[in-house]
Length: 466
Image (cartoon, rainbow, N blue to C red; front, side, top):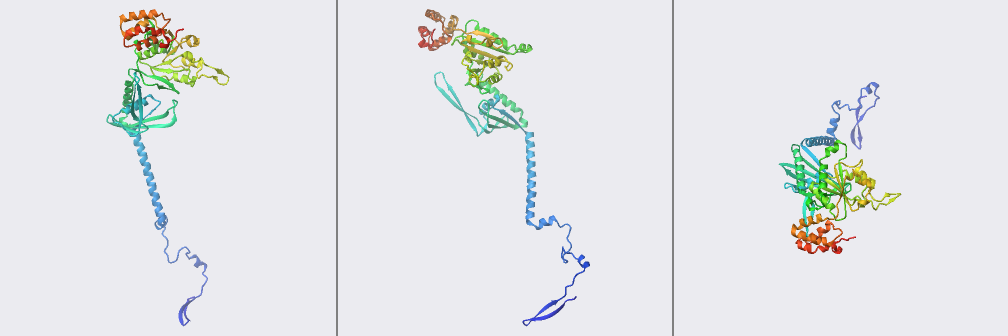
């Protein structure tokens, strides 16, 4: 039906009106229609998809750009990290030193005196020295503290990191580590640094005897190193000194003989005698003569157990004499109960096993001292635990003469002194008493002769005769 136009009037005005008739389309016409697109639009291009949506939507465009940028930066960062790790493994070498190792203190002391060191974290170390006249001298030195440090050694730079852990070592000190880093091409200098630090430490202790005391499950240096005592400064009776020295020399030269025959390579000595006879002084002189140190252990310590005793005796520092003083007093106060056993830390069987048992150590020189050998159990005195027993008695006439000559070196005055000394008719006199007299009147032998009566006056000499 073709629409036709008609004109009508509304309030005197004419309008064009379109009249028409709606017809129902046929099935064929419906099938030819496109309900998705207007008949006026062109057919869509197959390439119009995600890219056109991204271009037409600003939010999608911005998010996609950021995502691509983030992914690129992540890949770049990962590549840089892998490259840096690869370069670190190829170009840098690390050396870790723990404070449980001997070289730890050696290196810190060496680095504290290094002139090319660059440090901003420091720790103070105070030295305390008391002189013979009673005066005291103190000094301060700065050592590298926890943190980062640098030093230059033979034209190579080294980075040092000292770290302190919250964990506590068996000795009671916090665990610490020192990490030294340098270029891989300079790695051979690490051994040179440690060797120089060792030599510096050895020079500091050269001519001295280092004393060790047990602390926890470790041996710790006790006080400052002592000057080596000259063997001639200890006056013993005829033949005693020479016999012990000869036995020690033979033992130290017989390690192969012991190993070939399957005999434990250790030697035990018992020095017994009255107080003040020079037992401990002689041991100190022996350590100086053979260039050994001394590890002092108190077996009667309440906190010392059998396991700890065995561990300490198996980890004695090298070239060190083990000294057990007053061994008779270690078990004289043991009290046994049903609940706790022995109240003392170390049992007698534990001591025997540590000296000569499965858990005992080799290459050990053990010296024991006692004032009452009759109190010692026979199990302790048998060979393998105590191989040589020596009496260090009160002073004989031979010792009195030798001590006087060592202090004054005057043969004429010696004859006068010995005459006055015999007139006293003392039942006995210790070498400690004689030394006290000679030290007190060291200015003149005449003063020692005129005051020889002090040896029989207990209130002046701190000595009582029975």
